[in-house]
Length: 199
Image 1 (tube, rainbow, N blue to C red):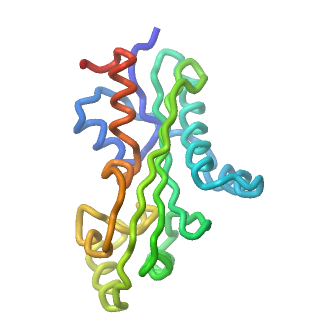
Image 2 (cartoon, rainbow, N blue to C red):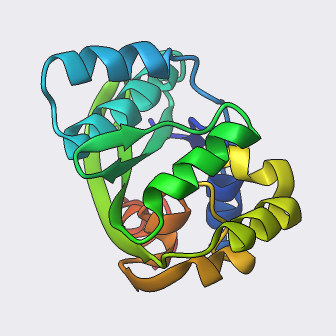
């Protein structure tokens, strides 16, 4: 019997989303080697959409296998620009290079969620958002990075839309929650339909 909900992620953004939506849950970050999984999937020629889904599933399954009485939510996000997948930047220099690569171009954010119960996936969704970055100046990037600081290292796209990062963009298509890192509305709908949240 399912007794509780677990988020298999250490992401504060995902935790905040669920908490603000009134979901009671525990947090058990999955211990998976995302870099190795991603490299193997890329070597197999998987598309970014499928890679995001596979990473979310790996997290959900790893935690579900150790928590048979729980509904486990695994989630991951992939940024894709012209077929190339970006990782979170290692340092501020790499963050700047990412922003320089993204400016003036359109990219996709793919935010996947997989729910597992008793060690098997029972539900999945990949939300897609498309963002077009303005051809911002070098000085704007300097000021932006100085203001945001090392917080940019926590996001795959190096931008905080809830802050000055919104000024980087000329157009955004897609769900706000998908941009933050999880297709929240779809997750909530599943939890309601499964009787885990009040409707």
